[in-house]
Structure formats: structure tokens, C-alpha cells
Length: 445
Image 1 (cartoon, one colour):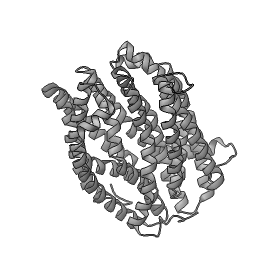
Image 2: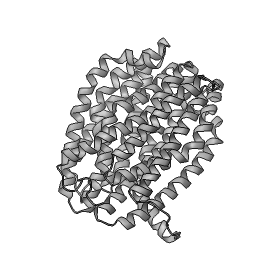
Image 3: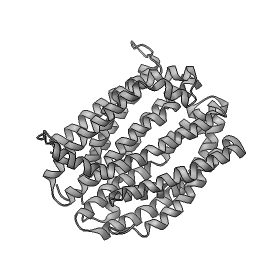
Image 4: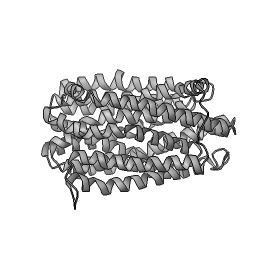
């Protein structure tokens, strides 16, 4: 299996391109779950759109934990594969998935029974909460399936195979697209289920993706199978996983936490602004898809090369990725700026929601180049086994800069001021991360 996909020997740009292209498709399909749900749910009215926007930080928390654990799996698995130790890689992946399922199962149960008090604190109305319950009661049931599937796909990517996870997610997305309108609006013989139908459609799609991911790991890659129970071994592997996964998950968790605070600030001004912000976050995720795809490719690339004793090759990949992403995201701002209102009109017919969402799309993408550098560099630090440094960068961006500036902006200039604070923050942190990236090595930072 070692270097089957050329991570250790083929030209860097060629390898990253070949890995990132399927990643773009795969990540797009993952993001399409939220975008498709948002589009169809928006047809149910502003209350339904606001409700799904309120759930976004909570659902993102689970996804963030999956991303953190997935980073730990990809980093450790990549190094084991790069060093040629595939037998230990197989045991490590098994133990990681067991821990992953257990954690999410407990969190989903807690979340299920705390919906009403949580969303009251966040400023949701009684109407919002009733709709939120309909969606999250189903969503929480499927959360362990979602997270294990996401981590399993990261295990596949750690081998250098980004094509298989992309194909799995394409199939899953197609199923979701078909089932969403059928279950939400009750097409044909099906009963109209409203917002609950979106959750059921997504759950079915996740289940199918879960089956295919595990089939590839077990049958095709032979990286997963029944493993003898040994608590000491599992604790050892969990500790290795936690070294990366704990700060990486926390790093991803603070993003939805910050978004939750921002949403609570917006709720004091206008619930249409909450709906617009929720839709804007989903649009932003789509606009940053190339950043996420390249970050996902860099993680196994750097890990395998460090495991194989090739630190200079890893460093050159970092430099190349940062230059590319800054240019790409800066150029992308131009079409987004001129299509802001048409994009907003896709998600709502409410004039106030369109107003705020148009402003969001015109202003925030201006800083997506610097934000891309921040995202890349934070993921690179995980590959270098410096997850705490990665966490510090994100904490500084969100809690030392973004939230104080957003509060000040809200006080001075209302919703406009709050939204303007976000790109300013990303520009400042992008410059800082670019400077730090020049010092990256296997022994520094």
C-alpha cells in the first residue's frame, strides 16, 4: 500500500491536484446536505428558515468533533502508512472508530433531552423551538452514523485515496436531493413532513454512505476488521489519537460556538438577520470548498512524508498550497460580489432576509483569501503534531479579535457593523498566519 498514490515520490503540485479534485467533489456533496436542506426548507417560510439556522451551530458541533477525530486519524494513520506499518494502522483505526461512536452516542443523547432550554437561551421563539424539535429529534438519532462515516472516510483519505470517499458522498447527496422534496412537501404517495422530512432524508443518505465507507475499509483497503479486545492497547491508541483529536476537535468546536454567539447578537436586532446569517454560513462553506479540499489533501501528504523522513518535501507543499489558495480565493471574490442579490434570492423571498444576505455575500468574501491561509495553516499544524498551536490560532482569531470587534461593530453600526467585523478579523489573522508559515519545519513553531 505504501506510496500507491505517489504521495512520497510524485511531483508535489500534481499529487495535491489529483488528491484535491475528488476532495472538492466530496466536500461539495457534504456541504450540499445543508445547502439543499436550506433551499427546500426556505420554501416553508421565514420561521422554518430561522429554525434551521438556529440548529446550525448545534449540528456543526457534532461535525466539528468528527473533523477533529478525523484529523487525529488521518495524521496518525498517514504516518503509520508512510513508515510501512500497516498492521498497526489497522488496529489504530479500529480503536479510533470505537471511541468515536461512543463519544457521539453520549453527546447525542444529552442533546436530545436539552433542546428546549438550550434554544430558549439562544433566543428562539416558541414557534422556532417546535420546528427545531421536529428536525433535531431525527438528526440526533443519526448523529453517530454521520460521525463514524466522516471519520471512516478520513481513514480512506489517509491512504492517499480521495476518489472513493468522493464517490460515496456523491451517491449519498443524490439520494438526499431526491428524498428532500418528496418527504418535505409530500410528493406522490408520501405524507408531507415539513422540516422533519429534511432530517429523515438526510438520515437515510447518511446510512447508505456509512455502509459503503466501511465496506471499502474492510474489503478493499483491508484496514479495518475485528480486533482482539485489549483495554491497555485501546487506551494507548486513544491517547495517540487524543493528542491530535482533542485540540483539533476543540478548534473546530469553537467555530460553531462563536457563530452561536454572533447569532444571539443578531437575534437582538432582527430575526431576519438570523435567517440570513444561517444561510450565509452555508454559502461561505461552499465558497471555501477549494480551501477545505486542499487542507484535506495536505494532511495525509504531510503526514506520510514526515513518516517517511522527507520533511523538506512536506514544507514545499505548504508553501505551494498557501500561495495558490490566496490567489484563488481573492479572484473568486469578483463574481461573488456582482451576484450577491441573485444568490440571496435563491434562499428567501423575504425582502429583509434578502437585504442582509446580500450584504453578507458582498462583504465577507473580500477576506476569503486571508481566511484560506488561516484554515490551511491550522490544518498543517495538526499534521506536524502541533495541535495546541493550531488551537491557539483559532482561539485568538475568534475570541480575542472577532467577537469583541463584532460586539463593538454592533453597538456602533448595528447588523452592518457586526458583519463588517468578520472580514477585518480574517484579514488580520491571515497576515499573521502567512508570516508564521514561513517558519514551518518538523522541529520549529
